[in-house]
Image (cartoon, rainbow, N blue to C red; front, side, top):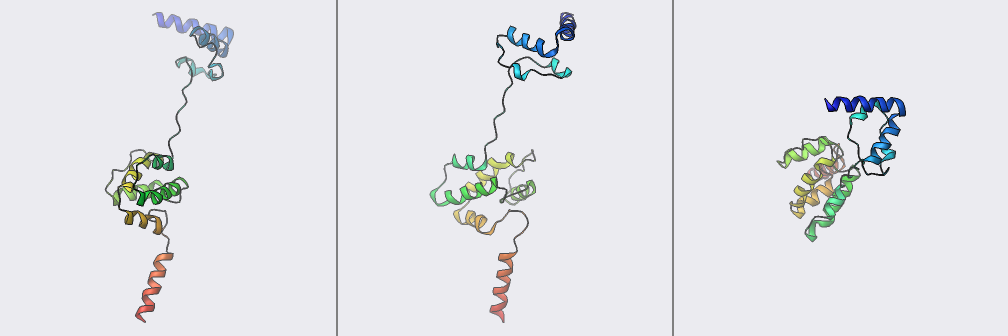
Length: 165
């Protein structure tokens, strides 16, 4: 019952003074002294939202930022960093499909969220655990880098056909 009276009183105040003014006043009463005045909502449905300062979401770490925090062996560090840069530039695993394919090849659980960012930790911890030779193959041949690059394959076929002739 008390909640109904409160809502009715607030509705009356909003009609009389406007939502923005009522929100400012509530912020002042709450001890925020207008810190979140600019964040005061202006739509009708937002009157039901809790009053208080908005919380900024943290930006997800890039692949390069994650890799730079990892303790990598010196023989693989440069290659893993290069793959992380390519990942961020979307030239290594440019689509979620490429990530899902990588996960299936290396028997890793595919992330539930279909975003590239959600897969960074999983993908790069797997890469970091690979041998230097396997990482080098990922770098040199562009595996999991979107549509197949046929240049190296056609070169190999040409070399082989020359040796057989």
